[in-house]
Image (cartoon, rainbow, N blue to C red):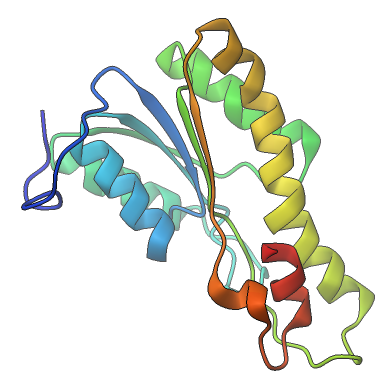
Length: 179
């Protein structure tokens, strides 16, 4: 079943029978990716820790809200709050997806933080936090999903970036991590 409205007017690619994991899917672009994939027929794992944009705190309601919205509109979704920046929990995200849906076909590495700090005064924690989520999380989740994609001879991994790679005033950490 297709959700109503999100794909209107676009050339449509269908994802019926496919399972997608979208990180950072509790808001913004990640939410839009999750909604579009669900609209196109994919079962979607909505992954989001529910941190603030700077990476502080957690709130599982962000992932749960988007998953519930997809289900209410006739799609298939599950919420997930695993931290992609940890090898064990990135693997747990993939394992949980396969346990629940029997496969993983699509990974959209979208999770990120943006904690403003001016160069050269960026502290080590700020730099490490950006790299851990943007770069480390993308690597760890792709690595965890890879054997499944190879085994089924199908899969897509999308790495998101931003124009921030060209530099941002007061945020070299974000620019470096996105690059």
